[in-house]
Structures are given as structure tokens and as C-alpha cells.
Length: 265
Image (cartoon, rainbow, N blue to C red):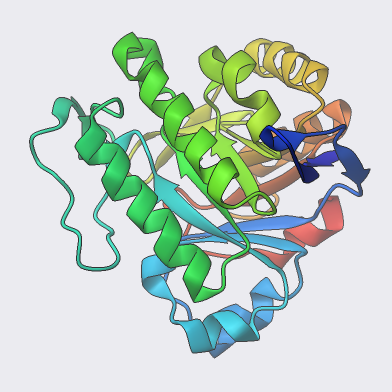
């Protein structure tokens, strides 16, 4: 079930009270260009997670779903909004699979940059954000506090926003009270190189799903396939169904929308 946070102002500032539960959403994840056809397809879902650099405010207003902006928190993705240039003195590693630099999220310069991106997407008309690449904390524990700080800043400044993260299991205890959902990428299948899909560890997926449930968070299962109905597709859908979580399957770079997903929610 989805946990949405309700806030009130007391004598000591912003405080959270018991999360309210609503129905788990159907959702789509799409990072490709936005056009009229894509908008029509996205409107079949209740939530959509999209690349904010691929859409303008006019197009965004035509999307009837809850609109969630993709923001890469842990790595330097090739996407940026506004006049603030991503700082380059924060690089601490390299992600060979996606050809991106890993950044020090604990750097004040990087936090300022990410916070500027959040401000822009919320002013565009997005209703929430999804922070990506939190798993860099497993290789670089020094970024943990920065991740927590940015998410806390976002919740404080946008108390009604829908906030989610992609994975980030090792910091979940610290951020679960601040977020609404976890997008669980590699749910049964994973990208191992550009254009190449393989299976992920289903036992680990099940174990992590159970842990996320203990935090009362919505789990959105994201997997990969070559086409609807192939062995990868069936693996993701079967696993998500057995665990009782909503799922979405796309191609390796999340640039297609298969409406067959709606039959398996």
C-alpha cells in the first residue's frame, strides 16, 4: 500500500503524523522523448516516472497521471535543467555499465545542484520526484549522509510531494519516514550491458521486498525484457505477482511503453 505523509505545523515546526494509506498505483517508467502519442499511452497509468528534460510544461499539463520527475542523485546523468551547471569537482568513481560518473552526494555543491533540480521540476508541474542511483552508497559509504540530507530537504520544502527512490536498501532505515515509495529496479531481470538483459537473484528480490514491506512503503517493481511475453517478461510478472507488488516491464533503456503491462498490474 502507498504511504502518503500528512504534515501539520506545531509550535516546533513541521512534524509528521501517521501515514495515510491509499490504493497502490499502476505505473510507467519512461525516459524517452515526449510527444502526443506517448502522452496518450502514459495516460493509461495512474503514476508516471519520466525524464523532466524530455518534456515541457505544456506537454506535462496534458499528462493526467501523477507526474514524478526522474532525478539522478548518485551519478552525473546527461540531463540538467536551469542555469546551474553540475559541479565537476564531486566525481569519486565511474559506472561503466551506464557510462556515468559517480558523485559525492555529501558534497554541499552537489546537494545545492540537486536541490535546484527539485525546485525546477516542482515548478514545472511535477507532483513528485524519484531519486536514482542510491545504491552507490554500498560502494561509497561516505555518501550516505548526503543522500539522507537531500531527501530530508525535499520532504521539508515539499511536504505534499510524492517522493520515491530507486533501491537504496542500505539507507532505507534512515529515509523510510521521508519517502512514499521505492522503485525496485532489477526485479527478476537486469541489464548487464547496453541492449543485453539477464536474470537477477530472485531470492534476494523476495528478501528485500519483505524488508521494504516492514517500512510500510509502496514497492514498484521494475524489470526488463526484449518484448512482451518473452521469458524475461514472464519472470518479472510472475515474481511481482507472487509478491503482490505492482510491476512495469520495459526495454533495456526504458524508452518504450508496453501497454500489456496494464493487464498484469
